[in-house]
Image (cartoon, rainbow over all chains, first blue to last red):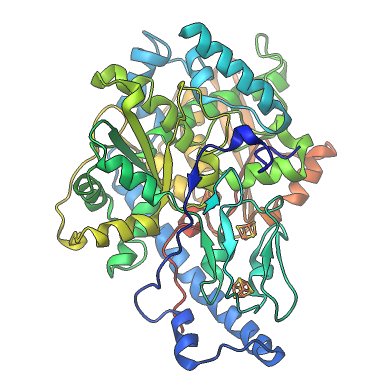
Length: 136
Length: 387
Ligand code: SF4
Ligand code: SF4
Ligand code: SF4
């Protein structure tokens, strides 16, 4: 069974309208092709395209590198750079997840912050629901 | 109308140009089609990553949207609508407003979200830090278990794989069910946020958790599928109600007529909004590993890590490895921790096969589906400029 397959009625959480994104601003490749009227599909086109695909890749690492550099620069600017030094992290453990102390994977942390995968999911859901009924 | 479930998020439109580019991008072979014919996605194989979408030269691939749900919640006075934003969003959102890729707009982003009507603006980086605490502790447990330390039996096998990328998780579940025991049981930062936003947060704010509507802004289309997975109900409600992408947030800001670049710099709200540099780098490949090592080193050694920048795990190559010596106080000896970082799910197969054959030398493996990490996720601004 594929977890979450459409046939699984109970997985249907809601109906969502498909929405299509509008065209982006600026001269995107898509618009370029539109403007150039190169819309017919053909083997010739495919050949021309692989070359463009290569260009797109060259362009692509450039913006990936810039976004990565942006995150590393922000990391360097942050006053606190280690997760365990985040004061609100200490607070959530002391006030809620492991009252009075900072103890990861406490019982509550385990319940709220950990999960199961694949074929273990149906039983896990049953477990979660029975816990909720107990609490109610 | 289409039903959005835990899959089927990504679809090819009827006017596909059949150029076949997407088939070379897809990590799972889910997308296919004959030359000259509309391409199709096999949703059983598709891991919802949206790489085909951001790379289709004609923009003929679309993701399902929950924007209308978010708008409805924002217009409903009985709802207490709150929001989290992933690290990678803040260095790409500005591109939709004419800024260079990499420009950090986090403080304007918080301001924009308040003007869109969110009652409280938090940050996924808080739960990225929480992920490090939980996943790091889990890793230490597995390492101690493997060393035969008393009290650490049955902690799970090594190596431990990261679990914050839902595309990677679905890939593992679909293709390598035998690898599941090696996956960290820690939820992703998005789902941790959802769970505490309807349990811990209400105790701090005195709000009825039933009225909280928890929205997530992600660089990722797979996160839309993740929030709908039926097991994410540990708060007693659906933990995360709706996910919108970086692109969709930009569209909302424009639609509302907000002059983004003129917004003041604001801060996130308190209790679940504070973040660290370690959490920030979750958005780039190698970042989860670096954040985990910073914390694991200090906790295991009991001493301060002076060189915080662990450059050995950085870079854009699809598979990277490093070995870090950690002096473990409790054991009175130094422990080499071997790590690997994979970016691009198609590159993980060999590492998995080594693990299943018992030949893996690693303790911890980070896997991010999108090349470069979430900064290049399927929900990010599309960059298809001609060069
Ligand atoms: S890349 Fe886009 S236009 Fe080309 S075959 Fe795939 S969906 Fe169709
Ligand atoms: S969303 Fe990802 S897995 Fe699905 S068809 Fe597109 S590239 Fe392939
Ligand atoms: S790498 Fe990040 S953006 Fe890409 S699928 Fe995984 S979580 Fe989403």
